[in-house]
Image (cartoon, rainbow, N blue to C red; front, side, top):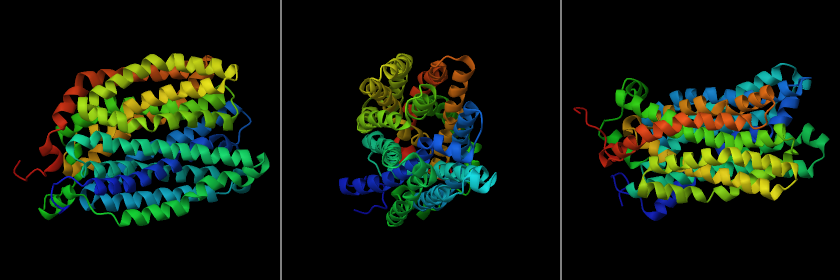
Length: 450
């Protein structure tokens, strides 16, 4: 088969494409989430404060800062993907993420280097955000442009699933280190291990990606001279693209960001900082939820291929909103009773509902944009939505708990945040979904005269 024609990949080719794309995505989310799993330790080592509440909020704020860097990654790497190729771009972003992560593992602490330490940590966190802002869009577009039309939802949802595996690996490795090392050894050098062990894995993944071929859609555009000279300008000056960006930002991506960063990231902070659950136990309970939810992503992605992306995400948002408050209340009660199996089960409920929202997202956004500016449009929609709804959600939620004294104030904020996402998905997302899945938009470059 000539893969430079707009023909679907064979099963064997598709498996290789999914594996190589997913490996990088898994590693990038592992690198990013290691910081979350180690927030308490890193706060003590890099952001010391006599006020524990201030210290914990400062640590969570450093998590949010990386989200502000993600659009910069999109602005840099999105147009690169659309101009020089999907493959080359996500080789660069993977290497950048690896360098930033290993750099964090090599940093001196505040006690050793003073104010230089938190500044360096902040810079490397920004570098991680830049890398992740460029990586995910390129990986999704790579898979979308190879996938058969009727399986795009299922195949791209695998990327979402492996992102969850990256989160799981981060939790597992940090938990194992905390269980096997005493507190002094972990604070002295053990915390560095999760950052440093990503180095050889990133090197291997980069070599694998270097051996991948460019997508047939990109090759065809390049051969026909129809690549965009300025994908960013083309996206920003297009009314159609802005409509797609806004619908994704305030609808599908907003819903994904709220559900993911509440069910996974804020959940960990809620257990550790609000309920005072021992960190390793909290991580293990969260890990159970991630394990249960991971296989559901392809199931829900496949469902979106049959009944529509927006419909699946809308149902997921409704169910998540209905369940979130009672689930968090149940977790609080179960933690007080030391019923850790019930805590894990309740976390799994929200994690599965999050998968229902997240699974169709990559295909939904990618199908909104023409191939000449697809990665740029995808990245802008996703990262702006992430900043608006997800990046500072843990900080806002913990601040509300501290200000009100109500342990469930944070989840109430998340539920309220989903209301506009639900409305936008219902009124505009369904229409966008139907219009975006035209074969001509997905597979054929638009000629200069159109």
